[in-house]
Amino acid sequence: MSAESTRPSVEPQLAAAECERLARPVGSAFRLASLKLPPARQRAVTALRALDVSLAEIPETVSEPQVAMAKLDWWREALLGMTQGRAEHPVIQSLAAGLEAIGLGEEARREDSPLIAQLEERLGAARIELEYEGFAAETDLEAFLDARYASLFALYGRLLDLPAGQIDAAAQLGRWHGRLDRARLLGRHARLGRVYLPQDTLNRFGLDEADLYREPAPTAREDLFRDELEAIRSGLDAWPVTGRPPRLFRILRAIDREHLRLMQETPAQLTGGRVEISPVRQWWLAWRASW
Image (cartoon, rainbow, N blue to C red; front, side):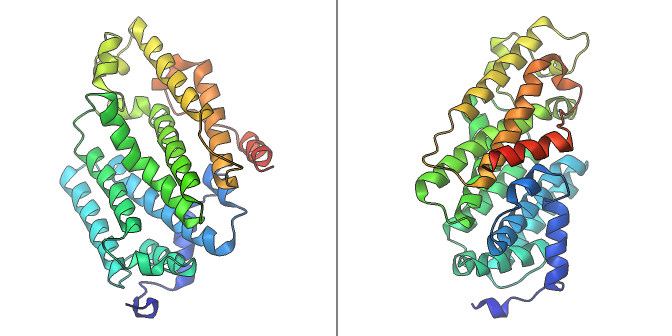
């Protein structure tokens, strides 16, 4: 099926603008990281990020489980539609066009392709969030992080035409980026009944899920937070990349490390709110990492 047979849902410029709104708001880390990409690759990466944001919004904003699952099923059908030359949403339209422009259009039209398999992984992670049952062991949490974040970072690598070794390194960075993201939102998620820490880790500190937001806080809670943040620091520091990684990943990693530094200064506040970096500081970190 040719690219010309794809039926656009809106004007291409409007579809691209919708992806920009979702994926690259002014001052965001992703905007800073993707600013200097070649135009065609920037459009493809932006559309992929917009799809990720759209999926992330479902478990975060839809309170009715049946409605949330119906939305996720709709996105799965929309992704299947892309393989059949249909564009049922501006984000899917832009993603299909972006993949076509960088030479991945044929793969995007094959249901059994590696690219579609990785997008299906991302959809699977959203289902895990909607059907949350906790994580018994570290391997269970890692499987979720790989589906939710590592697959996405690996796809960024594919869209940037990186060699296989750097794509694998991007996936590992994605895992630690995701673990930090879950730590930044720990308090909010815990109050919603979703804890992105393994049960065996909680047991090791003598805690249960309710202890993560119970006040006054158990003494062991801060010890748990410090342990988790140190594990993330070790992971980010040990990033196994060869050569000079792309600017996109260097900037995202630099901003992650700054978030982590602030969180390690006040681990007791992890349940109080999301740690943020000032726009000026974030811009400076991106500028320094770009050299």
